[in-house]
Amino acid sequence: MLSEKNISYLSKVNALLPNILNREVHNCICGQCNYVNESEYFFCTNCGFPLKNRTLVNDYHKRVLQRSHVLFKAENAVLVARVILYFMASFLSLGIFFIFAESSRKYVIVIFAALLSGLFFFLAFWSRKNPFTALLTAFLVLMVFCMVNIATRLAQSFTTMEGLTSILLCLCLLAIVLKGVQGAYRINLIKEELQLNV
Amino acid sequence: MMPQQTPTYYCDACNEKVKSYHRYCYNCGEYLGTNGATISVFNNSNLQGAFVFFVIYLFVCLSVQFTGWFNNYNKLFWVEIFLAALTLFFAARNFSAIKPLLRFRNFNFIRLAGCISLALISSLIVNIIISKFNFSFFGTDTSYYALYSSYSMPVMLMIYSIAIYPAIIEELAFRGVLYNYLNTILDERLVIIVTGFMFGIMHLSFISLFWLVPFGILVGIMRRRFGTLWYGVIFHFSFNLMAVFYDLYMHGHL
Image (cartoon, rainbow over all chains, first blue to last red; front, side):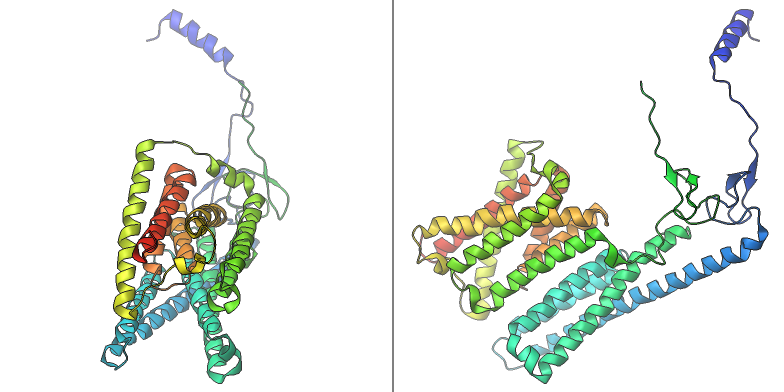
């Protein structure tokens, strides 16, 4: 039981508290995500689901479907880029067979092939955890290798069939990895919008 | 005490005032964050800046390495001047972000001594390994001294061109300009790795990649941990200085 002294003290404290007008708050629970919204809201502020106008529910589902479709395409682009990196790594690992060649520099070629293969395997594997960063790094590494490849034989690169094929191949690889970079950039944003686990 | 003002947010679609924690507009149902379906990574100004900077650097390095245009230091000097001007231009464009990194904060003699010792020891180990590798597989070793031998005070010129200049300009370029650009779109730990890779591949030597990338990552960690470029600059300078002295010693000029 509170003493009279305490009661008078509390009433004094209460008198000092700000006078909140309209204490009654009407809330509205979203049927889609169960988020508590204020009653005057037309859409859920957590998932965008229409709270009042039920005719807009179809639009909401269409938008989610469209985002899911874009997400699927972005994930596909990342997957293709990753497969290309694995493919390059596997192809480069075949360089180990140069050990049976009769070249005086066979050991250098074998070491380079093994290291380069390891680098692309690492980048492909890393893209499972951090797709954007891994693919961006892979794109930069690949771009430098392609440019070095063109620059070392600058004259032949643009005048021989072999050189032109090599440029075309470089451009194709770069385009695929770049598409993966774009896809990886989108994935996080769309997952954030759809509240999927990023 | 002045009451803190909370920022006001508006929906881009209907211009209605929304609260900071709202994910969707309560009035029109539009998503208030970045629209992932329409956004393009190519429109990101920071990524564009980083890419342009990197590609210019790369073209200059490619033309130095693979053309015969810059086969003496007279011409290479102007390349150095161009790259320094380019780096300073980009640094000046983002000076507000670069400025705090130029202060020598949390100065500690023990840390500095550790940084220099680590650089000298690791440089010595790397140079011995590279030298042995070159002798074993190519039957020869490259000498930096040959490029500078025809000038007066070649050793001083080597120290300037190999140790002082790259330590300042490369650190400002990779741990300053590029790091800041990428830091706006990536997690900082990932930025360290990416700038480490960029630093490594910029040297256009495949075998060097396997010590330049860890070098770049280590200097990136220093920049993140100590909040200044100077430990990285000193580390880079000590590392390259040891390479200069090792080169002079191995070729009988010391």
